[in-house]
Image (tube, rainbow, N blue to C red; front, side, top):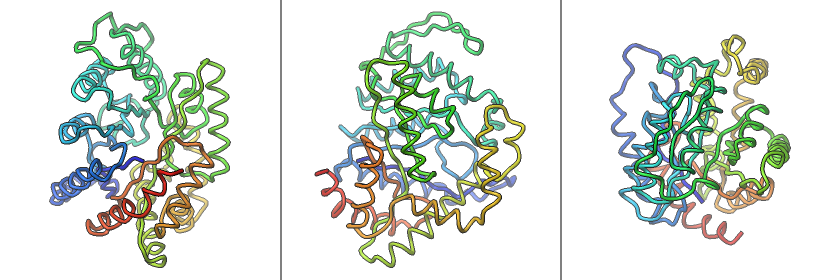
Length: 358
């Protein structure tokens, strides 16, 4: 079981002077929750990378996780995700190797190629190059972490041989994953030998079929079996079935609305952006449906309910996907701190012990 922290999800502010007065309080609240993860027996603690808005205020993901590594002893620390096109790949490989010396073997790498136009433009990275950069940067970083040195000559990466110092302490094989939503990205991730990080957003029948496609593609390029996927999603737990449903649908639905805003998933810019054709199709579909219907569909893919209902839903997800780990988001969409902590504590007391027996 894993727990996710540093979710704020306030949407995509584009004003010249956003209200930042609450940023410090958001951080302190999330860090307080993160401090509970290891004492509560969670196996891993995860966060994400985002820039320039209140959607999720983590512009330096490895810095945040390094801070948590120093406050913990054994819990694994996961990136969901480091967005490779936004980084210098040599510098990122060095940072990962350094982290592996500060917290040996505890880092779980999750990579992504990015989707937020506001972030690509703000960082000066051409969005249309994201897939090419993702592939070439992944190759450089993963090879460097295994052999101890950087070297590559590809169209986007002209890297002379340089050693990683300090050298990584452990292999990253088996602890490297990537987010893949489009069918094309599934093939790329399989070829690169990474596992899948899945945030439920499609009908489960579709997701199960895509996992099978990924496994078949993986088998074409590798002799070893693929890593089992990791599933990550919002969760709300309450003793009252009615309150759990009301809060889950409201706040997980709001999470979905904030996601639409941040990524501009109803926008037309995907039509002009290379390698985002799949999102052009998604945009058309979203514009043909009422947002309220989409919110409810999305909420029902996630986990909310009484402790018994949460147990059943997580168990069903594990059975459908064969996932090796389930990561829960407890803080999202401006959910009040006492509600977040109440949901987390109830999950820990009545759900987590049962899930460990599965």
